[in-house]
Length: 366
Image 1: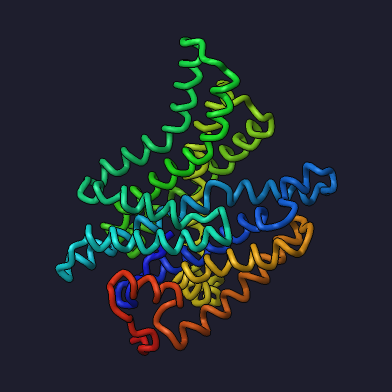
Image 2: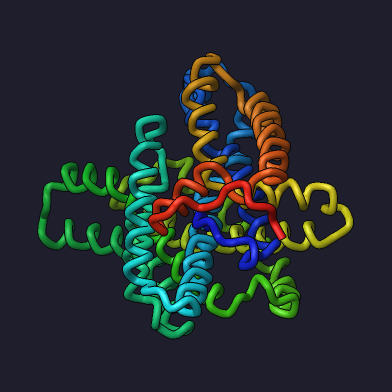
């Protein structure tokens, strides 16, 4: 997530639109966890309809393991822009970036009090770990990303082979792997996307119409691979393979290809839609949400835990309608706010903390 409050002169409309669209996906995905019971618990209780199962399947297909990849890519992209800007201003990028991430960590810890699924703390830590890679070549960053994407599957395969060769207590090892595979996968995938975003941001690829046009040629292939791969992942996951089985290895290997492919296809589709006449009406409001991503993300946590969790059972189709209502309100509120202020409220706080001075909030945009 490109959460850092970039000055207006540095902004790229494509980044803001992508951030806004991704935030809609975050709300749609997180709503299944905000509700009580959750969608999974609702379906397991037998109170679900076929439409509920279809709705949950669609969320898992298009949001799970994809939305956070897109946000992580944009986060790395934003760090690259900050690095370019700070180098022009003569600032010490490393020291400033470490302080930025420390401030983000504090904001994330405050969010944890509302929502245990917070991603800000993870991004703050991984944002610091990205610093040693800032001078690596683009090719090296791509190789690192590829290694990180396949790392979870290789880890499962290695532990499975080791448990057989060394006669470890299989139930104990399976319990450890079952508990660790999700956070390990999330961290590896997110950092891989950070690295790719850093490489893309240094070249300002999202600002290049030529690059976007060339990338768009890969849209059919990426969409096909993403849909087919995620469907295969869903089939494997439905069989609940044992943590140390080769089916589990296949699940991780499939996701390592399918999740980035569908996230890439989604980003391209959003950009093409935003550039077309059909997307003209929503382009501005989406960009406004994208410019206030951090404030809107925290607002979603507050609404989810403070209101949605108290509404009782919510079925996936109703959850989609609720998502549209909440996000529609965020679209309108963000546009109204930015008509008067330079930054979102939390973006302004973060920027003021990062630079150690009170930033002008009401200064007119030029």
